[in-house]
Length: 59
Image (cartoon, rainbow, N blue to C red; front, side, top):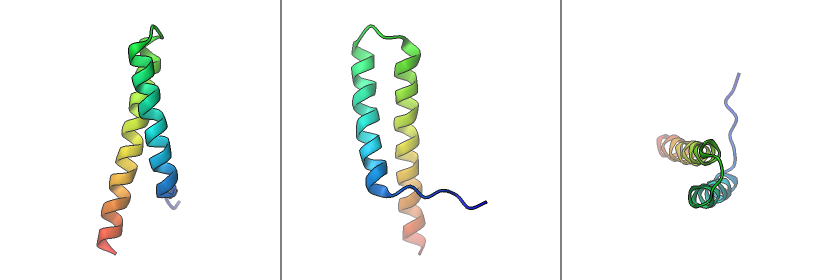
C-alpha cells in the first residue's frame, strides 16, 4: 500500500490551524485533552512537512 501524499499547501494550512487551536485551548478552560489533541495534530503536520522536504531533496 502506497503512502498517502498530502499536498504541502494543505499541510501548511492545517499546521497553522492546529497551532492556533492549540494556543486557544491552552489559554482557555477547555479540557486538557483537547489541547493535547491539537498539539499532537500540529506535531504530525510538522513531521509530514519535514518528511516531504527530505524526500524531495533525495530526488
